[in-house]
Image (cartoon, rainbow, N blue to C red):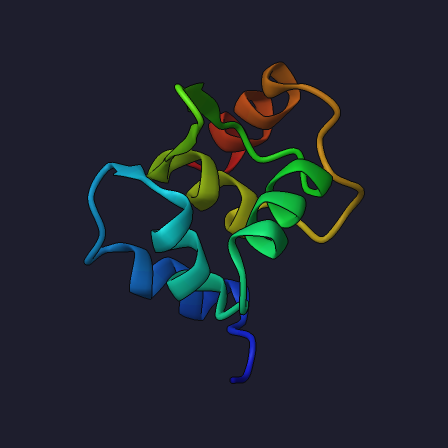
Length: 88
């Protein structure tokens, strides 16, 4: 499995629902396990929320992540939204 580039991920995201699960994230990122997907989610400051034991990821959060310039991850959701507003 080869990891996708940011622009490839943005194209692939169009076929997914607005709220993604970790199973969707595994497919999109082409990682092998749920543990790896969750680790990636947390390390890259992508917005998500918990529902019970599961993780839900707004598709818009991934779109913001893959559209932003290649700089350090945004420290807060506020920073992510500011970046999104600049590029939208």
